[in-house]
Image (tube, rainbow, N blue to C red; front, top):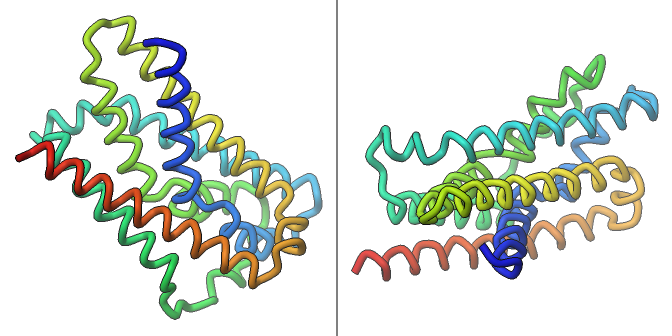
Length: 213
């Protein structure tokens, strides 16, 4: 794998995961859930949730190809399914349903209470993120040599790590982010990211159907 391919794969992973994880829209919930935390415990919650995000997605990266083989799922089928899920998430971000705000009022006792659920799963690494990682893992699995295969997995893992790091930066500065963007700014950012998610989902479906025929 050439350096240009290395960076293109990494940017692809980051560009696909960040809109789905959407840490900007998670920031208000994070602040609400950590309202009774001190500064150190809030930072610990942000760090733990992003570590869990990395571990969860990396696990699906390693086992994704095996799961495809075990269930006899083709790459094209997975890409179409992933595209539909990503598009659905994008539509939900553009046209959010009326939801019960009760979850936002739940107060945790410490960081471990909220780090995995609901922050890491499903907020930062939900079904959309998992679908993207498995689809990319299947693509990497098509590389010919063992050296390229190992380098491909390392590249995707680096992309996941960068995505988790970006999420950590946003959550760590969530108070400043929310105050700077305001409710209107967060809503606008969510809709912009939703639009890009729809575009990514449509591209996955179209390219997969084209490849099938």
